[in-house]
Image (cartoon, rainbow, N blue to C red; front, side, top):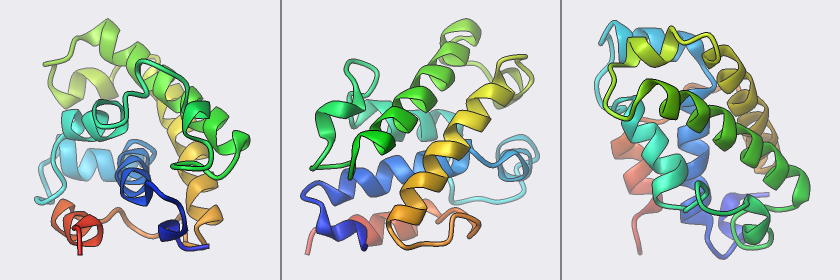
Length: 146
């Protein structure tokens, strides 16, 4: 199903974008560590899209089932990803360089949880979870109000 069938599909698109970037170690190395690709923001931008816009750091994704998430399985996967990512953010600090997050011993578990959530949401939206992340400008065009 297209994500636009949900009332708050724009939030879903932003959350999916963050999960996508947080779930791909190759993307992270090439974009956040090596600075090889511009237009994607930094790791802090991805974390903000995941929790800042959605308040998923304050309450469960279950609250958004039917508006942002299709079912409880999606909500559980997203909650797990949020908790794993925020665990590292809180241990390392909010303003640390990407290398500090990516080098943290708990980061692989955060990546795994983000990967599981990203895959579930992408498949449920009928999209290829292996496609590369969208640049932020393209995400902005996708979610612009008509």
